[in-house]
Image 1 (cartoon, rainbow, N blue to C red):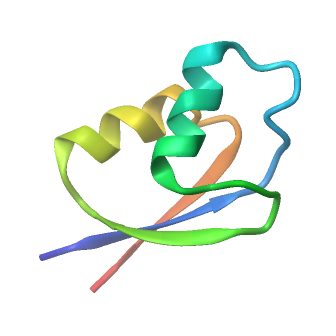
Image 2: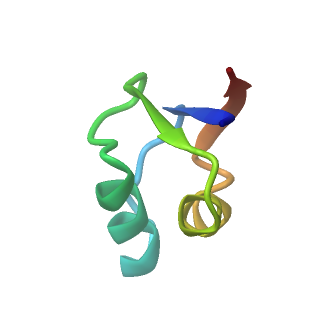
Length: 60
């Protein structure tokens, strides 16, 4: 199964509550932090909400 490597590249300061909650649910707390999540629709939706704050790469 493909996995997604999600790295926070911008601050959540100034974002709305949906963006802050999505970052928290993804497990991202600080700039530069990276998490690996399975490629599932639930995570794709959270990433879509914060697509301007994160960098996403596919890993196997």
